[in-house]
Length: 374
Image (cartoon, rainbow, N blue to C red):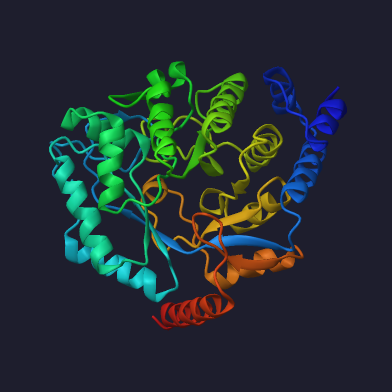
């Protein structure tokens, strides 16, 4: 039965929820990986695999929601909360540009008092100073929060943000797109339909975004498939998702610290099934940030066609006790070792020029040597 389902996916036929669930229940990791790799090569016959250079900038850690899985946020009453100054923000972006980056991932908590105009000014100031940088910013929970706080429709909020300089939206805050799960692990945060509606409204404006999933906590295997299915349905409707990224829950330092880490086996299996099920999302990224270099590299044989970001800065996962850092050379070598040419890309998966790649390599080599010298 599993072989029949895999053959169906490899040939390009759409899987049903029940078929996807049967694959997740399977322990034949080799067969799943082989099928996912065949699908990847059908969708991406090109001789290269991609990565990008960006930086996760968390403009604030103050959040009015309470998520049991998050070690990063601080309550509005906490003395440990911050909002980045413009000078600090610009310094981080400038360093990113110097190292060949063309994008920042700008996310924060659900700040209870910052008005929509504050975010518009933030975007405008960044674009004035760094017009070449794409702002991949504000997850659906943040944008839904902006809408509630400003008492304006999503379409209005998104139009104003886009006019101010927002380039694309990350898929953060999805966790598992099933209300039972969301109610169990978070309070004061969007439910499934609200998350999807933000993406729907953005896509209708012509915007592009990524989609994500954090798994390995309280969800069932059937709920992982339901998550895939909700994304696939919206992608059928809008075609606005450029990529899908999944990673395992990191429990350390969270209120859910008693939940054991999901294994690399579980990560690779879920990634492979994602590639087989999400037939309309073109790109899948490896999560070396949570899995480390070797499993991140292996993910490129289990459905991923992109190594993700060099990620010059990452705070949220690091607060949960998981700290994996790679150099640009390590990312490129990991791709080369698999027999592919490494290529730098942007959020739309457009390739950088060879000259831009070479400049980024030289800048990052200098940075790596400087770090070693320290």
